[in-house]
Image 1 (cartoon, rainbow, N blue to C red):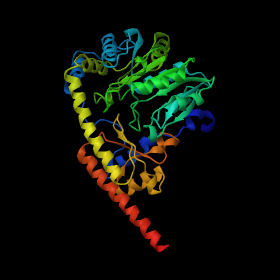
Image 2: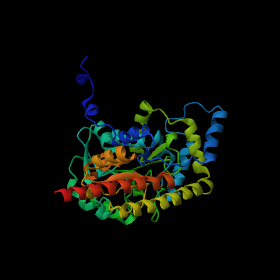
Image 3: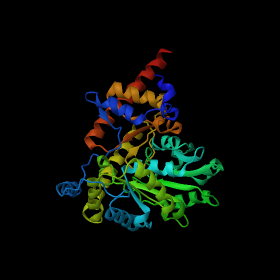
Image 4: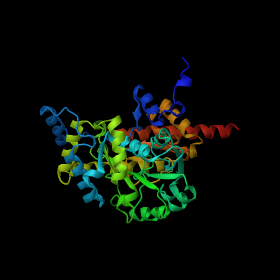
Amino acid sequence: MNYDRILNPAVTSMPPSGIRKFFDIAAEMEDCISLGVGEPDFVTPWDIREAAIKSLKDGMTCYTGNAGLPELRDLICRYYKERFGVFYTRAECLVTVGASEAIDLAMRALVSPGDEVLIPAPSYVSYMPCVTLAGGVPVAVPTTSANGFKMTAEAVKPLITPRTKAIILTYPNNPTGGIMTREDLLALSKAFEGTDIIVVTDEIYAELTYSGTHASFGALPGMWDRTVTISGFSKAFAMTGWRLGYALAPEPILDQMLKIHQFTMLCAPIMAQYAGIEALKNGFDTNFEEVRKMRREYNRRRNYLVRQFNSMGLTCFEPFGAFYVFPCIRSTGLTSEEFCNELLYGKRVAVVPGGAFGDTGEGFIRCSYAYSMDHLIEACRRISEFIAERHAKSEDYVHVI
């Protein structure tokens, strides 16, 4: 059997996730500290878990409607209205199996073969594969630490062609932690004037912003009808394993996403949806106090890691969102992959090479601070030791020469 001839070349040519590679190795390594995975170290608040347990006790083990439970969709729309000033109706809301499914649905509903999609670089590893699997062409828009890894109209405009169908915004950003303010987004929106480009904005880290309030692209004047807003419960409510996300979009777009969802996923798990109802029903008192507690703790860890990496001589841009730092490791003379391999096998600390997030991530590493302070302190001790030993070796080499 010639599997090379049988399998889809778009899939076989796609490299596996660079994030999972180091996580998988670390999971089998004794005494290894991982800063690799973006998953809250908090447990889902008890009242949310209790709501899911109650749904099971009540026999709620069936399918829901394809778009999700009406009460949950209404609450999601209320949440976006009250938190971010974006107005959606139940008919413009689709509950998905995590935000990742929503991204895939958006790409497949929008992209025709050969269409181009602009994607900030560096950014989350799933965007480019989703575009490719939809038959589109991902086009990287380079961002740099000099301007906070923000997308700008000046960077975007030269890349717009007659084939440009959409642009993906991902702020707060994974892996950089960069954010875009309302003023930043307004300036960027000028690039779309006179076009039909759709903006797909992934706002999964919206509640994890440490400077001001998150700005949602769909709230900007004249941008609502060209915006697909994607988010979920994973990060804010520590609900990663529940796989509960959603998409908000004008009906003509959402209806096509819903069709794909009907034929592929059918519906999100009913017990997760009841958990989501509880998260948002009391969201502006009990559960959002839990969100605020998590954000305060993440902010403490963020400040610690930025100071530590800068003190090691690894220049670290100050992130104002998500739960990642993205220090530059070029001063070590190693590539991102070399640095991560040597650190993993030499000091048993797992971090993610920046190159996993696109070519512009080369020279950086991603470290998650969704871990305890004790965990972070020990990881920094080992990384500092690693840097010092490398520096000593390079000094010895210079003396020998």
